[in-house]
Length: 303
Image (cartoon, rainbow, N blue to C red; front, top):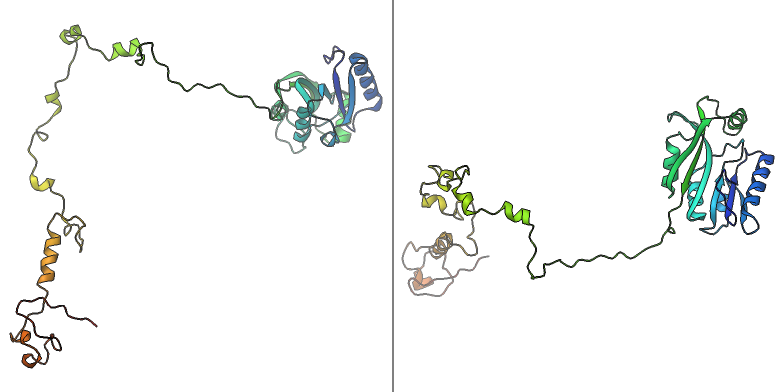
């Protein structure tokens, strides 16, 4: 069939729906069978049963859907995905579908601008609109009966798409080279234009039109002042509000705390604490402890 571009020996699927007139469907199928000849094959499927068909993937060269005169077939995303699955790589689908001119409608009928996008999302490529025209009286009556749409903004669109020349899920190894390209001398190549941009010759230095900056002019009087040593000193642990010295304290806090520990020994009021309990006062903190030498460090037990 020249109208649909069908050649002898091809495998063709004809998809119909409940709105397709029986006699028109028979004439279409007979015409397709005559075109493919004895070496071809024609399968006839209902659009609602297609997702549950037993066809293997990549089975058909051409799929005709909704092309029966008087048909009001609607192609859901599930149907379009199944069409893409059973098409051979490089295969072609030709479908007709009634659409509305305005996208703001609650009828469930696709807008004219969204039909090509639906085919593309199903995995088809080279999607193009072949024909767009008002519905015939027979087609308008079929839409009202089967889709329940009573508007007057309907068009019938004939659209074509192809399956990519590879199978769904196929993979191919990419030849990538991460080796660094070097010049024959072994040194990395330099772009001559880049080298010229960052090179100053003797003539450039003597050129009166060259405006060279004096580095001394970049410094102001504040930059030339000698800084105060006190402003360069790091703050001490005590200035930071710490009660303990740092691990490698260099500010003197560690020595200060150590000196406080040494001087924290209780001082004797009577001067006889080191002689023993016989010479100690009733409130002496060393009661019960043995005598010790004057100045000897005594560790007191704490309760």
